[in-house]
View 1 (cartoon, helix red, strand yellow):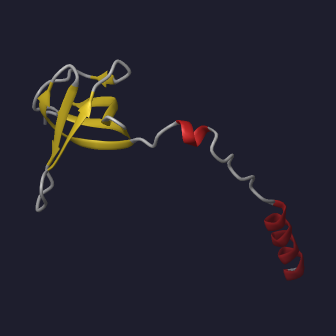
View 2 (view 1 turned 90 degrees about the horizontal axis):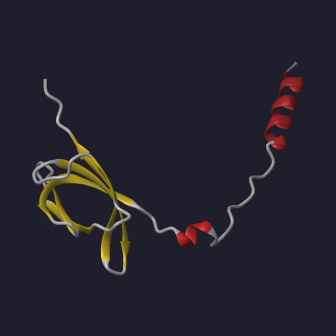
View 3 (view 1 turned 120 degrees about the horizontal axis):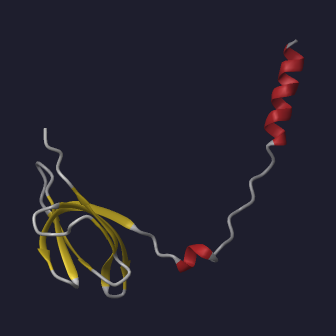
Amino acid sequence: MHAVFAGVVFLLLSSSGTVPARAQGSAGAEQPHSEFFSGIVTALSTEKITVVRTVLGKNSDMRTFSITAETRVEGKLRLKVKVTVRFVKDEEGERALHIIVRISQKK
């Protein structure tokens, strides 16, 4: 019985085969890696947004992102609201791809 069970396990493991390697340099090289940053909006214009993240016991982290025509904004963007920014780093600095305004939940 153990020999049959061991044979079945061996067949299952060996039949999984190899996973084909991902194509090198095709789609990955064209799209830059995006990152996320969350915090409070401290400065806002039509071209830039500045967000400050404060963590208890650590220094504040402030970042300024450029806003382009391709930047998607969810919610009403204004000063002193919490936001999450998806961004990429390029030649001009950090460019916002998607800005999500977080509404505070009333309890």
